[in-house]
Image (cartoon, rainbow, N blue to C red):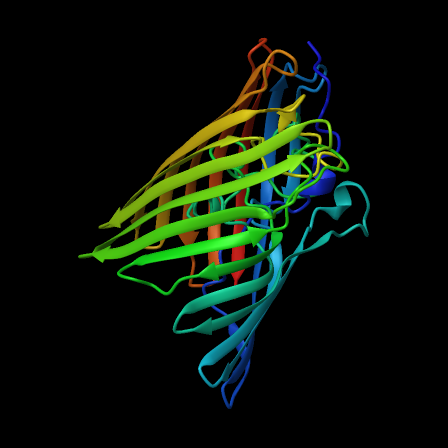
Length: 388
């Protein structure tokens, strides 16, 4: 059975789509009279073999070997700070680079500016102005145990041969917090609690030419606490936006995310989830004219939800991870019916030193339509990551 391939424009928008946590180490290039300037970076490459059994797009069953980057792209970032009286001014710019240009053109390297923002810090908290990752599902993905691994790929989403990243657990456990222009306030730490509230540039979810009279609102409340030799992290996040066309469709986008992570004596457990309406299941609300993943059908918001459960154990330089994630989308009979996207991952991370890690991963991804057809992709990824 062949379904309409609605994902033809996906990679153009999602090039280099994975997300990063800040590098654990950085090089300070200047530190004088209250002014600092530094640089950090991340590099990774994997040898990947994928075997796909595809009923959604017929005649695409195949085995494919690639040399690719993983879920987290290669990047270089620059950081600035300056103390002026009671205010600390700062900023960050980061440039994310694909190494997979040889898949289509030898000189087509994609460079994506995901962060370009300034900050003002004081005793009352922080204000961020510029472009940064969103707040909805932010901690869901930042605290993913396979963030530095490979994750899921499929031909249905054009990821096996794509020039960008693999998807980690995007679409099978959480929605990606797309980097967006924003004005965000963060409170100081109060007994382990921190609150972030942001106004984000809205998306035209009701279609080309739609009207958004207010920005999208996103927020996240986090809690961090040391407990003896262990730690506990909990969070919840939220988003809301309304988009409309005069005399036509109106789409309300909303979502709630949540999660909990505990670590003690080398053991770790992470559980997170989300429920959303009018947000799709991959990258949240996006311009309908650019992204062929609908968030509404004839003005009726499409519902989606998902969860991710992970266990880990660290012994010496080795960390073992088992992960299961599932997302469900209720498109309704007018479009695709129900869609389920699940990913199962087993991974081993080995720290050669503080900067170099070796990674071995086995991943199974399955995308299934309620009408019957599905794609199942088995992937083995062997690679290394280097950070500074």
